[in-house]
Length: 176
Image 1 (cartoon, one colour):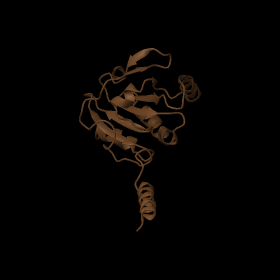
Image 2 (cartoon, rainbow, N blue to C red):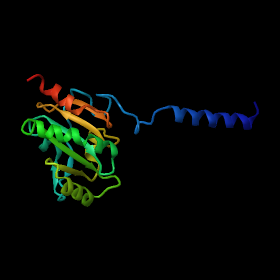
Image 3 (cartoon, rainbow, N blue to C red):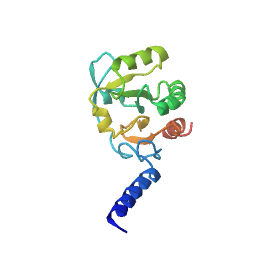
């Protein structure tokens, strides 16, 4: 093999590897494979409410189970998860907090407010302007969901539209 063909083959091999290997942003990670490790204490992070006031994310956990979704208005996976979030919120209104953490990527706080006004989800949307919650929860993409139990520990993590969030919450609460 001469020098120019070797370089061509190397570029081809790298390109082929990139096509075959799943992209971490598009691949669906399994339960517990994203976000903070299961069983660890949920991290705190400063975010904002939709009026721009600073709030501590853990204030929304407040001693009861909480489902956090790292969300964006343009996220198709987030849209696909919406019926499950609505069902969880309707089925367990006093037993679990549902909180959407809006990432500050390719959307504005105003756009998030407009979404909330149009859809009236019934649970809070918070604005992660500086990415503090994204970093704390290792949410490298949208549609990352973290379920925190009543003791403030991470009980479930997942990403993508294929998550069974209703089942994860039911397992958290157990039979009955």
